[in-house]
Every structure is written in C-alpha cells, then in structure tokens.
Amino acid sequence: MMAKELCLVIDQIGREKGISREALLKVLEAALLSAVRKKFANRTNINLNIDQKTCDIRVFETKKVVEQVLDKDEEIALDDIKTIYPDMIIGDTVDITIPLPDFGRIAAQTAKQVLFQKVKEAERDIIYEEYKNKVGNIISGTVLRKEKGIHYIGLGKTEAVLLQKETLTNETLKRGDIVKAYLSEVRQTLKGPIIMLSRTDPNFVIGLFKMEVPEIHDGIVIIKSIAREPGERTKIAVYSKDTSIDPVGACVGMKGTRVQSIVRELRGERIDIIPWNDDPRIFIARALTPATVDRVGISEDSKTAMVIADDQQLSLAIGKRGQNIKLATRLTGWEIDILSESEYSKIKLEEADKTLNTTLRSETNNPEDKEK
View 1 (cartoon, rainbow, N blue to C red):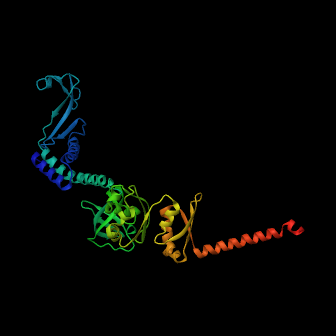
View 2 (cartoon, rainbow, N blue to C red):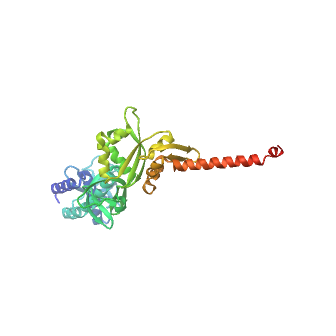
View 3 (spheres, rainbow, N blue to C red):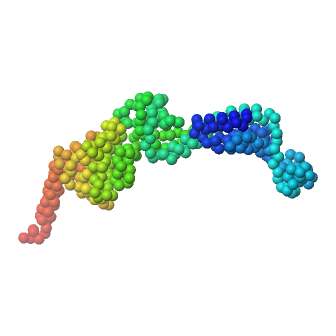
C-alpha cells in the first residue's frame, strides 16, 4: 500500500468513525510491527514507525555498536558504520533501515484486517468514555425495536437499553418514538459498552425539572427531596435561596406551562410541588397535599408524626391505596400516622373517661375518706 493511499484510507475511516489519524496510525503501527517481527523470528530489536503526516512506513533494526560482532542480529561493527555515522562510538546504538520488497503487500493485507478490528475497539472505548461522563443526565433517543422485554434506543452512533420495568406503566413505546430517559449506568463489557436508561428513576423527574426550570438549573431553586410512584404520582419539595423567588411558582411556570410540559413527558403522572420548610410540622402538613390537615404532633426521638385531619379530608390525605401518605412519609423522612377529627375526639373522650374512673377509684380507696 502506497503511503498516499494509506493516508487516504486512514482519513476516510477517521471521518466515518470520528477517530483521529494519530489514534488510527498508532493502532496500525502496532499491528504492522507484530507482522514484521514474525518475519524476523520475533526479534525484539526489529522496530517500525509510520510518519504522522506522510504515512510513510519505515522498518528498522536497532543494533549495538561493538568492536567485534558476536551476534549479527543484535550487533554491528564500528568499522562498518564509520563512514555513515562518524560520531558513533562503541556502546552506542544505531537504527538501520531494512528494505522489504514485499512489505507493501503485507502492509495492505494487515491494514485491512487490523484497522477495521481495532477501529471497532476504539469506537467502543470512545463511546464508553463519552457516555460514562453523561451518567446522571437526561438524554433523548429514538426507539429502534423491542426484543424480549428490552427497548433498544438509538443515540446516533450507538444504542442504549431501556428495560420494560424502567418504562412507565401507562406508556407503550413504538418504533420511531422519540423518548427522553435518565442515563443511570454505563457498563463496559467484552462486546462493548451497555448504556442503561430509566424513565422510572426519581432522578428522571429531577432532570426534567432542571431542563424546564432555569432557576433549578442555575441553582437558585433547590429540590430538597423527592418521592415517586412512577406513572402515578410524584412529590417534590423545593426551596429558594433567593427570598424574592417563589420556588413553587418557578416550578409551575406561567399558567402552568413548565410543570405541564413535564407531566406530558411523564404520560400524565401527577406532580405535587411542596414548599420545603425546616419546621417538620409545617413540612409534614404540606407534604400531605392535596389534603388540608388541622394539626401535626411530632416525636423527635422516634421521628414519628401524628396528623389530625378533618373527616372530609382523611381519605384525600391517605390517598388511593395509601399512596399519598406513603409518598409524604418518603418525602419528609418522618413516619406519619393519621387520624380523623372524629376518631381523635373519640380517643380523647375515652382517655378522659379512663382518667375520671381512675380518679374515682382512687378516692374510693382512700383510707381517710373511709374514716370520715
């Protein structure tokens, strides 16, 4: 293969695969060196380099300069090179070019075999490094196909994996659909990197808010905590570093445009945006949105809370299948029990009766009373 032709092939592959000429030449250099050394009984003093600009290939042997040659493969007499290298002395090493008449054919065959094999490996490494640095981000891709409960998502030069269990329960992804997902993990395997996506991870919702709400992206509004039942309901607690900015209003947007965009992406998943408060009583009461609760009592030691709600608000506070109270518990980090106002009043009445009965018994059993 002529140097000019080799350069053209290298540049073409580089453009198609997004790999630099330097990286490709380094791979080819190593492969050709291995092929050349086989011709010379695997002598380690046989070397090869490829010029980065011209793609000229040079094969040479490195020999030690000696007075008397004992090993012709490893040594060369000083007298034999005096005219070419007058400054050489005994003990120096010299590189002597080896002309190989059929090396062009060897280079061509090796280049074809090795380049495509090594390019695949280089591509895998590039993809791994690129997407490893994107873990934790939201990325978009096209649904290519579904096989055995796995959606394969096209990301341009590679594919990602979206397991069925990582999709929302109320969505059906079809070939050609454009989807956003949270990049949760990149695994390096012998067959190349596996890029794992999720649409159920709570971080997916956080990422969507970062994309839609500039105040969150800029760090002015902070998402303090999140609790999610994918496809059904999410609660997020938000706080603003700037007192002039309403964190809930920033997340909702003008006429609800920001949060509505996120709800559409989540296929109608309901989102409760809760203003965070460092007073656990206030925070717990707000976390039970959309219900309104009357009173909250807490135990700091056990980190438990007792909530009293109006009878009409009780079912709303608990939620369908207990979902609302479960999410509020996860959002706040407090174990929450809830009673209706009537239940609480009944308990208080029973406690009052017990106290009264105990008092009466005590008075009846008092010896002083008997004497009187």
